[in-house]
Length: 159
Image (cartoon, rainbow, N blue to C red):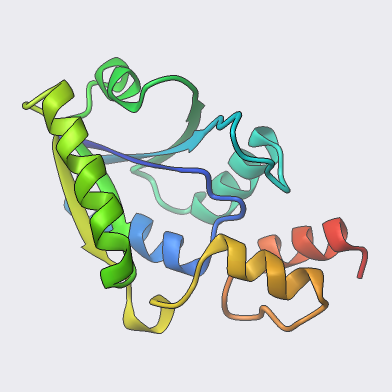
């Protein structure tokens, strides 16, 4: 069984993230969307809220599982029996960081591959940070995030 882990903070999941999940699910037998507990970030949504939202938007994808982890990603990949880590690329600006990330993963375990997937062009500008910034000001985020996430953001920002 070919298992891939798609890690991230997903605070919140966007349609760009979802595009990567859907495409990864066509390539691998199982995709684990792994929500990172990151103590260095101050997330808008708790890990539990993020996993619930992702489960809701991926519920019709039979080979997608949603989980969370903390610690080193490579340890989590081993724990899940995965062979591949999926990383999404939006633009050239993502590449340098992702190259460093992939190089470190290869140093930690040369048997685990990192697969870069380019997001759909319509989402190349999109990030969770931009979505939160627009949503916090009451701007229109329709089409940038799934509807359930749009509603969750409205609840967080009180509109």
